[in-house]
Length: 454
Image (cartoon, rainbow, N blue to C red; front, side, top):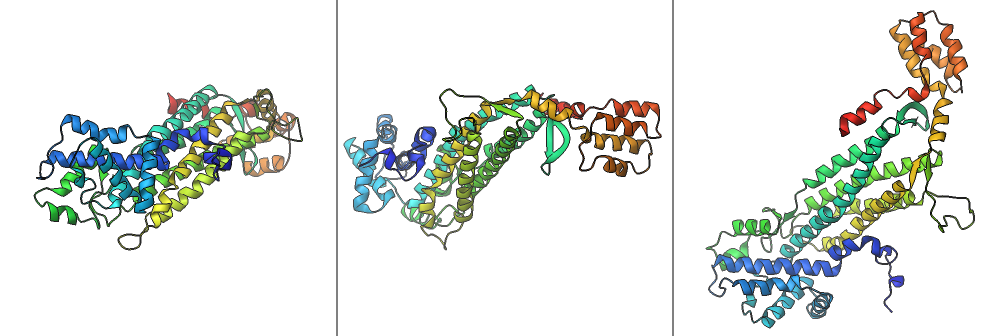
């Protein structure tokens, strides 16, 4: 019995509603619809060339009927294609026969030029390119933009909030929360801009990429230009030099770009998980929510953990696709076909990761008391500026002196004061050092945020 609880993948069960905007693109039904769109627009474009005695240019009414085949596409349409495929045992041929059926219903007789001179990969390469383009530009980038907007807002809000830093897992020179958020904002923004410039390529040149069948049937048409213009019509760029398949290099490029974006998200998710663990952030409580079946007190950072898991899953798939898809035996093999059918899973896990991170980030707020106490009790952090100031004064071995005073030790203001007063330096320099405070030692962090975001 068909039921979401019986699905193998949680993408079609537990998480179905959260990735619904991708299911209409990458589902079997979505693939069939896109194939039909390309076949129908190709037939219309052929008629507009007026090069075929058998094919006159379609009237506006006829073009409307042809386009209605994909515009009015429904689940019943998809079922009919799959029914035909049971006989053909070929998915693209089933699409061709379905279109012919629909044309006959609309009393359009020129059915034999459906799929004219094409090979399946002409339809597949363009279909997956369009599906990818829609998923990236209509779903993933807008979701990423929402996160970037939040990161920018929080970076400005906390641009001057002194914040504990960690290098090698240990206390280090303080920063500001806004500047640390800015680091991730800037990394993600850069990758998003690269993604927006991505080319989406299509191959439309017949069995081994040489326009052989096109040319033999009608050598009076500039088929290379026709294919270029047709691909531009459906918003793709022509890859003229191919075998039977489009080599999929651009798909690998997209996978690698998302792999890096997801890796940046892994980085920020793990950092904020740690900040929560260190009590530098508090999490909002949700009435009725349970995060531990045994320990009632816990408020776990589950959204950041969920994001981490989904980004990891997505990246394992993206890594496979970028390694597998550009490789084909000679002019064609079918190992890319089953791989492509799983492409949507990588983007779905990415989308789940985006949404989980967004939820987690919306639930946290800085624990100002814990942050302040940590900094005010970390006088050893002033070893860096003190030894740097002493270098300017020509004091001998200032680094070694501060190392002896502070390394591996917890010191307080009194010890710092006694040390400074013991030095043979000017009163002005002593006062300069004694005015230092851990919570004020953030350099130009605020100015960096303003420089980038204003």
